[in-house]
Image (cartoon, rainbow, N blue to C red; front, side, top):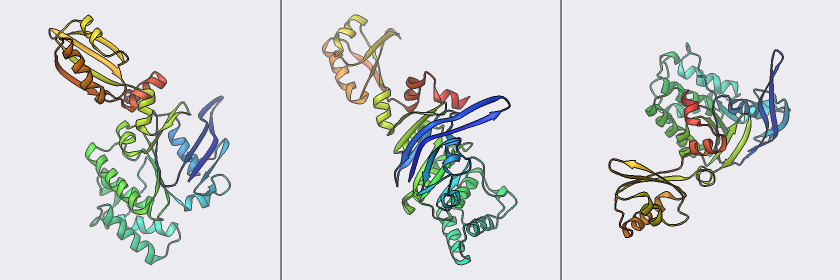
Length: 319
């Protein structure tokens, strides 16, 4: 569905040349949901704007939905849906009129766009809001309207550029529920940019990590975590450090200890933490070191980003 090679974008600001995207190679297969993950300014949105023909690449090439983005932009746009960071509906316009106009832009007949608008309003729980102005809608309703606008042409490929930024957790979850239902219904390929780690982890089948305009990792979320980060076991024990280190299995992982409430807190960085925990507790018990509490923290995509770049993506997104 997408094939990009050497995709590059530079901007000039006076005498300064800004390399926003630096030679990206990426493929997206039909039916995939791929998330582009990275901090603000990493090049995610610029990449999407090139793939959707809104920005002309400085160098490289990209084929989207079977057409070259530079030579056949109209053919690309006819086959994609694009939901940008801002709201797509005109604030003073009525909801139904915006959907009908979108259908007209795609050259749909009156009968077709009327039916599709009604169908999408019902599917995205916007029924009863047809005559309301866009500015009167809540933030979550506006984003669902954006999804409806992006789906009026029944695109085989949908681009979502940070679709849930600014929404509260409930509205974010609600929007993703609707996007997932629409994807299943229409069999769409979805490309998403986000700096929300939980969205990329839970929704995407592949995560493409971008930093400073370059792809630094590309794999399924679990594969990225296995390759670039460890789980962390935390145990509080009644014993001394020497006994703990002697008891824990060789090769379990890096062990650190510190005093904690009259006992000893033991932390172990290890792969497959949940599976390793029972064996660690049993080894300590057999050595006469009882465990009073235990916890497992699974590796996260932020751990992956931190290990790859030395920076926390979660902290940068919050800033």
